[in-house]
Image 1 (cartoon, chains in turn purple, blue):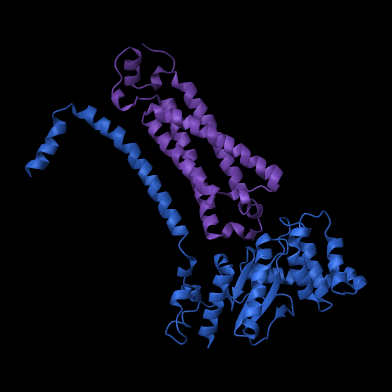
Image 2 (cartoon, rainbow over the protein chains, first blue to last red):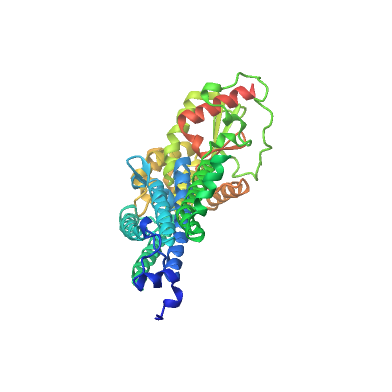
Length: 172
Length: 263
């Protein structure tokens, strides 16, 4: 049984499609295609960049350096604004937790845990909405942009694209 | 021994490769995730260590509880040779006696919010430490970021040419929140100039004059020679005070330590 794309698929998926019981289905995993694997690896790498970005901002927040004005400013206003914290927790730390979750889910999905792929899409969609809100705040409320915050938003958009692609290729 | 051998013999009873790949699938993602978590937590821990540990700020290594008695060993030595930098505008704007044991030099920007927060803290320190503290203010307007910063710096320097720098400095900082969103701040500062009794014609001439521009430029040169990249940047007796230590209670301890060390 050879179809376009089948060359990318492991033997197990073909077994699965031909009616054979997928191996290890008892633990919720399923061998995935190389294309999907590439997408999840991309998502994992993107989330690592996002994690580093968010951790940097968290460290800056905790050490109080976000308050200092620098030549490349903007961040000072944004990160010292009242929107930079939620109930005393720095937003950057919440972002770091979100990126770490995305990384974990993408890694699990890359190893074939299907449920992780679904959760990944949901989480990334939520992060995308939060990013939209944060960009709105920067553009219209604080009226200052912060490069690190914009980088985070860009990564979230990238993650959304990869998550949607992963869903698309799941049917292959 | 028997227990281990039985533990090892168990997988062999099953198809070897199946089992290996099952283990891979279970443990490899967990290992990767844990590794990333470890690196993340480790780097955050490393980067948020209290700055007091760094040897360049020996005075800061003492918390209020463990403040050392005067002339204890280690109170004065190991002081990093401070980069003196090029001189800034002469004469600088200073408060307090020239021979004060503690000298604080602030590089500030009138439009910078934390500088506005730091201003009353420094005033409080001046009141508390009196003749033991000398304060110098250096202009470091962050021009593209803060569009009124240069005008504010010029206004204070123009007032300085009439001997009223600190009055203007105080008015500009105290009212930072009122003027920061103005479209044109020059009328606002002119109002302050009238309030402190400046010769307005001269003030307006000086505002755009060479002397004021040169003074700000000279302070900027000094800032760059000292590696100042943001505001407020504060040096105490030639050593940079970490930004986190600029809160009143922390700064007070640093000044007290410096006084002890200087005795």
